Length: 402
Image 1 (spheres, helix red, strand yellow):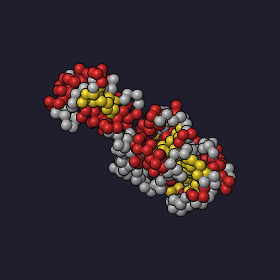
Image 2: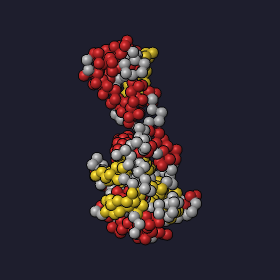
Image 3: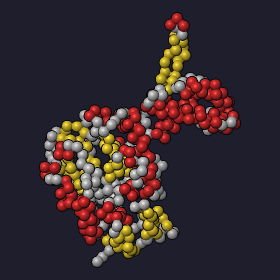
């Protein structure tokens, strides 16, 4: 990136910070702060800062115009101390990071930016399901990262003192690590008449919550699918599962037909081969429902995370806090476009089309910003400022020479 481009971006970031309303974390004065300036290279972080040293965040951002801004998940007695052991840790938010680059099935080389963000929003909804339904967390802050994903901050009283190992257990749970038949199917010895124990066991899925309930919902969905199909289609559907051939499919179909209500109640002891079907559905459930979070972010009690209201120096989009009730309607490529840039146009020289949706035999690319699509090609051109800043921050364009 050339100096004139950095100078332009510094100026426009300052204009943004002059008018933006930041979303400050609680206990901001007890948190460590960090930032990356618009220096050549632009990757060296200045950290171990406290508000005592920085002053008011709004004034600091307007004065310094940094490329990226962060605050710590942890709160400390002395957040400005240079060594972690000297800060005096007092607890940390439980922070989750979802990045489209890390989602299964997403190839950054072939998936458009808009599609990556849509996939990441789907992963976010899965994560929130675990946090709200399984753990019962209530104090959640959701934010679009300004780049390729989302952040969730949990600040319930019970999470602040959790150590790394406890946080890793939560990570493993939402990622579905070690979820198998032994962990989700309850096994109870059957007691017969006169207190005698039968050699048989009763196996059930807990329908009240957790991974067991998720598996149960998938089992019931399959039962309803089979009930709606004719015999031939039902058997063909069952044979799509590994290890189920023609004979077993007929036996399982009959068992389901005769025990559908029991299965809906959670019983999985309807047939000997039904257990294998349930195990296959457990694998499907983990694949479909787990949340692919970035483990190191959640387990690191000293992690720095982006400040809502600040700008992402790799896109020009705003790190945007999202109210839970507004999440379904939230469109990051519209709602995270800073108002400061929205109605302007500037001339830039596009130098690289990498990462854009190909158009016209790779001689042009498509950029989706602000609810519209823009065709750009190499060379000098006039573009809406949000598009131009998006390209400049990604080293795909330079500010026009004046």
